[in-house]
Image (cartoon, rainbow over the protein chains, first blue to last red):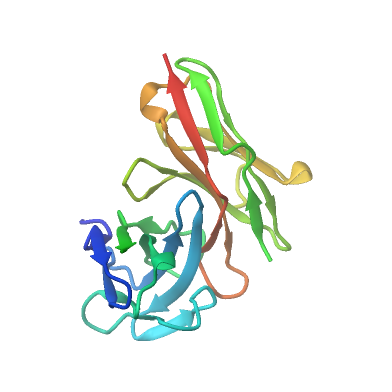
Length: 115
Length: 116
């Protein structure tokens, strides 16, 4: 059973470009979470999605950031018009059930660098 | 709101020495608590979790943690450090009560260095 797959592992974008980060959850997992890790900081929750639904986006910046988890295909975190402050590691996690006693499995992350 | 405080951003121990990484939490409801390890350029791997069963929780790689409600703590320990334990360790608390399962609030992390 493959783990949570994120791609690309590294992404370089110029200021003003768009960044698209992909996350394929573990097989059988329908809950996806995105976290952002700024340099020298812990992970910060961004958004929680189930298939075709955004459940909790309380950690998402109000502008330029969006996320989706379509019925088919990976979850996508999209950042429009990137700025230097968006440079960070973005981690995706998935879990099979709603209850929080269930472990969330993390991907290896996408490291976004904005130049 | 929930929060986690990890005391000491860097901890250095000698190989074979006791490892103690501190974590204190704040939660208005009974918490679910987790310790994750992150190796360089890797994702997070679960070490152990507390889910209101036994207060002493054993995890992988010889780590364990004890939930102490009176001290609002969940410190991570290992009796004898190994070079391979060098990594970043994150304590996290989960909020299940608002319906947002597995939304984790992380501490800022403790980088463990193991020396010969």
